[in-house]
Image (cartoon, rainbow, N blue to C red; front, side, top):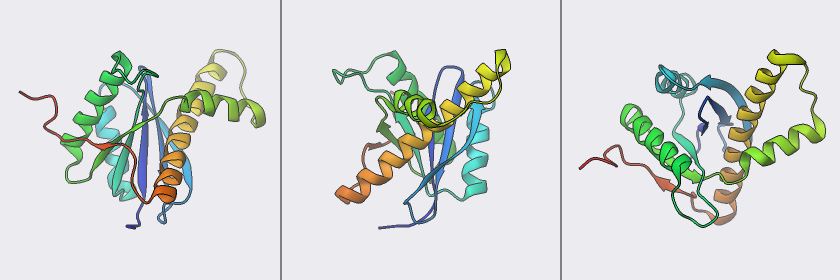
Length: 162
């Protein structure tokens, strides 16, 4: 098994949670929340370079029926855009169903969100986005360790082109 840091991205409509693994691929930790929109892929590319990531995992919100809904199409398009700018660093789409729900449950069960009010709400969402990326990455690392195969699918930078 190859070692090296991996970055996980949980793309949402407004924010993108980012997490990183340790070099041995055992433990995931939150990094930051990137505002979705202009410059978001550039910031993620900076994080890949800064962290010397060997792979980027993008959360793919597949529906329970397995069909690709709007959120899944958006995540796939984002992953393709990342694959174009990050090549040759591989980008992998991994099913993230329920990671945000799991992250919220973990945070609510044991963590205080700190600030109250409007800023506290934004800070809470930012923490949840990072926690969702961390849950996604940790489950990916655990699954890969237990099966000896990386989950998900490699995104080609040419996907979606005619």
